[in-house]
Length: 127
Image (cartoon, rainbow, N blue to C red; front, side, top):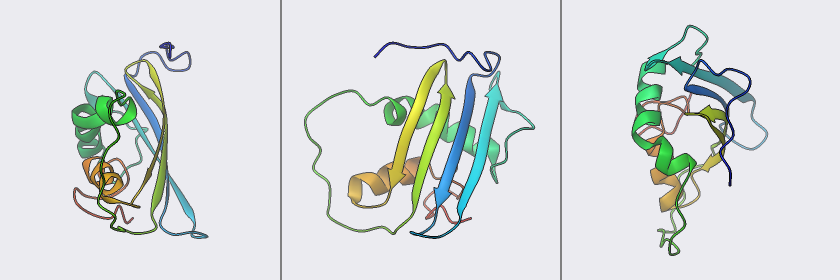
């Protein structure tokens, strides 16, 4: 995979769109996180853009661009029907990540990025 520079908005190191659905057939909510120089811009529409930016800075590299490795063993527990799709740019790299709560590994990913997904840390991501 080659890195592609963000041609649309080079001045922002984070430019993400988050599409969240609470359940199949439920309305889709769209949020935006835009940040440059470590500060969310006024264009950000998340409930807490500063917390979302911190989650992205802390976990974004590992979650958006995971390194190949051995298969993960995940607990077979169900965390809920919520799904989220995150697209855009992070530090000049294109992001296209899907989140769900279908097993223990996916629940952990969701919790790590909960502020980005429209909720507080540890929440379901509920609006």
